[in-house]
Image (cartoon, rainbow over all chains, first blue to last red; front, side):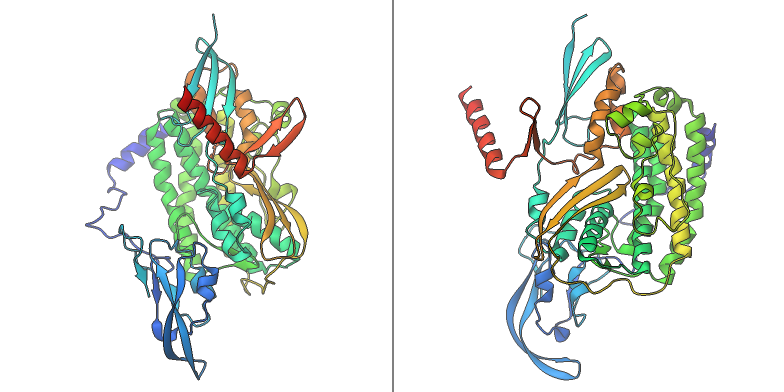
Length: 119
Length: 393
């Protein structure tokens, strides 16, 4: 009997599913999406590449002056993230001392090229 | 009548994951079941030995997609015990909230699968719809629906904001109302009663003899629960009860799981309302001292055990994962004896098997009384020998 009443209630309801792509899927603020790097904040400490579980982050040569805690430093390296190797665990964001590398609440792109990088 | 052997799997439409059954049947009745496990071997334990404590957690999370938080908590708990760390209460509460939400979503998923196995797909659709409320809560809290990544050695990765707590609390009444409906459905619905009652019966003595764990054992009246026997996180200080049942069949296992959903909802509500203030992690040393630890954890499917041995470095020397499904297989073989062939899917599904967890190879020689694990080279040699034999034939 409970099944029948449930069925009747459901008949009068709107569909539960989200009609993608006409309706957008709501993304929460804490969603771990694609990786984004703010270049002027990065001091090139390599912590993100050391903690990255799938080793998607490599440090590439890049000479630049950056400001950190009121001092001007000269960084020698910057991170490069292989987008399709990244598992979006958020460990780089957790261990970054300056907040330069973050996982943003945006859907990651899809593709077939394994070598696509974010710098 | 002569006995016939019906091979099922490793690839089979009724089984979602690879396992090979050789069902010996006499007409419609099952005489016995021969199991061939470890069709898939992923080598996760060896891979875990090569990663430091920060990088190993996302790997262990991927042992299983449903109980991902269970594996990381069991591991983090073990390492913290070896390091003798005291975890802040707020982190422990957050771990408990995620663990219990995981239990709710796992049991709702199981209820849907059980409905699907008996051809009651309406229930499958309803439970999975209601499970979305839990999944949304988990996604809001952790940032992902499956791999929450909340644990780290020494605490949790991110904090819960007041808005997230409010949103989670707001979703609970609807969930409770829905679960109450399922309680009524299980007890009244003829479709379920006919397929669940008296199927796959196991007595308390048999459950103890075959070493069943989790809801499978609790449905036979064995009140075994690692949360109660060996309290970890905050289970010793919060009000909750072990759910047991005396039916011992698939119906009993359904009742236990639904009862656990209700119990978990209460735990989540209590933890969210009594969330203490404070830090969410403590500073941890990079290396762990030499030591051994057996970390017990009550995963949704039963007792999960991580054996961890450290050697003073930042990596584990050995990690061995005993998953609940592995402990429950013998009880399945016992339950199936004397049952109808048509009941195989529902009896197998009743233990909530997770083959991706159970990908371990151990050789047990009964005559010589020897037990050892196969090394990678031996495995390669065996596959080569088999390939050559097939080539020749």
